[in-house]
Length: 95
Length: 490
Image (cartoon, rainbow over the protein chains, first blue to last red):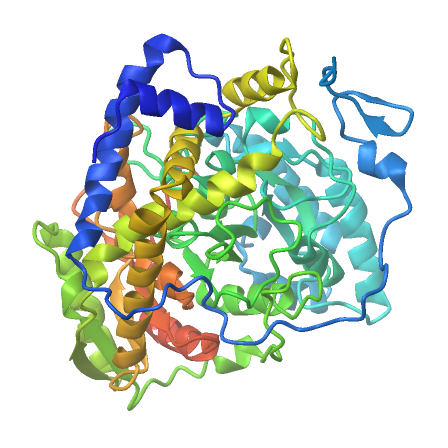
């Protein structure tokens, strides 16, 4: 499987990273190099093997469904690049 | 008299107890050491005022008999741990100016145990790298040099600021985090001890996330005893991290009995790779001989899926990273680059804020998780991960620890190994399998290569059997008698 410029542009958009047109080709080369290395996994017989998502062999603990934190909007917003009236602000999304 | 900055944690603890010096004196000596080691670029933020304040409180606790396990110990905090009110960057431009409003559990545990913060350590951006050359704040320089050669060498990565500073005696110890080898590989490159505990032993709460199923914090210290002391202070169950293990923390220092008689040490034959440098093979054979001399039983074992660990890792880690790093969007913290609409603001912010290696990994991760490729890549890698875990489980039937080299080479120059990202990934070939299996692993300095650079050996153990890992590492350390020092000392 090999990535072309168009696919790289699509992935970059999915990842919300602007990639200038002239960088797409070299980036495709780098990503294909990595994907080529990854391809060797196909040599491994994994029929009937469950995918492993966590190495923690224990059940997740449950806790009481109660509020244990919060109530300090100023601290939550303290690092926001732009905030106003207790909210984060973003460019207009509704016309 | 010995310089205060030459003392290990255990020695400094004894000195403080015996009132030979105060915590403030020890901290002042380290503040001077931090300043004189600036050429290494090991710190992103120095915090001398915080350190002095903490040291004064340590002296008060020592005086009233309430000293903790790390009382008065001036340490470096990898800049991946959120520290309340102190700039936390993950070495990324995208976290410009971020001052967390909360403290990570690991750093809080260390401060509660009396440790003193000298500053925040440089690292690879978002802990992605093996040479500390992807930091927005510049490369870290290894305090070691090749004999007769002035080339700057890398300190390993991603915990490269931590490793360089511990080796150069500009901190008594430092925290690291290890996703695929980011504690053990830099420890080996700088001649120090680096210990990644079992996944779940240390809380991940408040640690900037890279790959959540792999990330694990651990100590980076000058010797094995110090790692035992420091891990004891870091570890423990944390309700704020649902993957943190609810298992009692043993007295790790008590595990250092000096006795490995009858312990079965497995030598995985698949780690003897084609094209392995003769010096790496030699130090490994030497390590085998040392443990045998000390009374351990050496057994050959097989971990047949070893060669597939790296390719599986380079699907799983970028996939998790692409998801974790989605939060850096210019809205809640850090950098914002304006755009004509919301989407373009996101795209401009992430284009300006992430470095080249982070972008590569986010793109690979996005691709392997995207519609149509999820099964072929991501699920396949998770199935291979199951195979790798099974390999280790089988190995534990015939051995108690595994001994391997820590890295496939000694430290290299900053420009010598970076043309191809893949060549850089191979640095972690010996450390990644244990990361995928969540196992505890320690790198111990074992000797010098022909150019005078440190080489490390790695011991791996069963899940939550850090005590046996430490016991083996302690004996290995005694047998190796490694006492070489880098050319640059603070």
